[in-house]
Length: 404
Ligand code: GAL
Figure 1 (cartoon, rainbow, N blue to C red):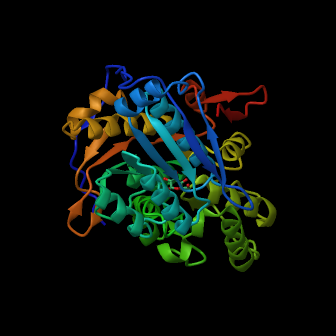
Figure 2 (cartoon, helix red, strand yellow; figure 1 turned 135 degrees about the vertical axis):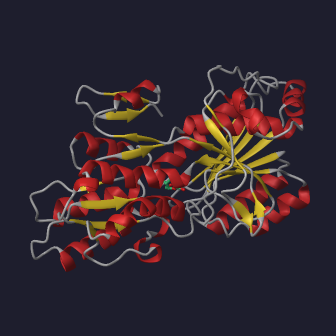
C-alpha cells in the first residue's frame, strides 16, 4: 500500500469567502432510503424557481450537481449529504441528492439517472469502490467529471478525490492505545487486545486498519500486546457494511471463546463508531472482567459520544464532514471553471488540508490527485472542541447532540 505522501500541508490563516458563483438556490431532488422502496421527494424553492428566466440563470451560472451518498443507516452520511446539498445550493447550483441504502446496484442506477438528468459534475461516496464501473464509464463517455467523495472509487473516470488522511485516522487510533497504556514503558506487562476493522468493500477500511497496525505491530511482535483470539489479518477482522450487529456478534463469539475463563481484555481496536457500538454492547453484556476496556472509534456518532461521556468508549477520531463539503465545493467550482487544480487551491478553501498526488490510485500506475483533510482525536477531555465547531450542542447531562 502506497503511503508516500507528496503534497503541501498548508495551514490556512485566511478566511476565504466563497463567492456564490451563481444566482439564488433552486430546487433539489432527494431520494431517501425507505423500508419498502425509494421515495422520490422533490422540493422546490418557490422563491427561486418561480420564473423560467431565474432557473435558466441558475442553470447557466451554476449548473447541476449529482450527489450520491451510500446510505442513511450510518449516521455520518446523513450529515455529509445535508452539508453538500446546502453548500452547493447556497453557491447557486441545482442539486440531485440520493442515498442508495448500501446497495451497489442501486447506486449505479442512481448515478445513471443523474447522468440522464444532465448533471454537470458528480460527487460520489461509493458503497463499493470496485462496483461502479458501469456508471463511471458512462460519466466518462458523457464528459462529466467525478469527485470521489471520502471513499476512493477504483475507476479512471474519477478526476479527483476528497477525503481525510485515512491512514492517519488509523495511526491516531494506534498511537492513542500506545500512549494511553504507556506501552513504551510496559516492561514485562502484557495487554490483551482484539481488533475489529471496517467493510472490505470500502477502500478506506484497509487504510484505517493498516495505519493502526503499523503503529501497534512492533508491540505485538514484542509480546507487549497480545491478540488472544489470534485474529489479526484484515480479512478476518473486517466487518461487512460496517454493521453494528455484525461487530456485536463477532465480539460476543470472541468473548465467549477466549475470555470466559477470566482472561483480562484490555483493548479493542475498532476502526469506526458503528462497529465500536457493537463491540461496546458485547463488552458491556458479555465481558466479566472488572477493568475498563479501552475502545477506539471514528466519526463522532451521537451514541458513541454518549458512551465516551459514560466511560464505555475511550476515544473517537473526529472528521469534520462540514469542512469536507466546503473543500468539495471549492474543488467542484475550480473544475467547472476550468481552473488549475493543485495545492494553490487550498487557501481558497479556508480549510486545513493537504494536496496528495501519490497515496491513492484509481488503477495501477494512475494516481488520483487528492485533497485530504485532517482528523482529530476526541476523548471525554476535549468534547468542547466538538461544540466549538458549531456542529454539536452539549446538554445539561453533558451528552452531545449533532445540530443536524
Ligand atoms: C468510511 C468512512 C468512515 C466510516 C465508515 C462508515 O468510509 O470514511 O467515516 O465511518 O465509512 O460509514
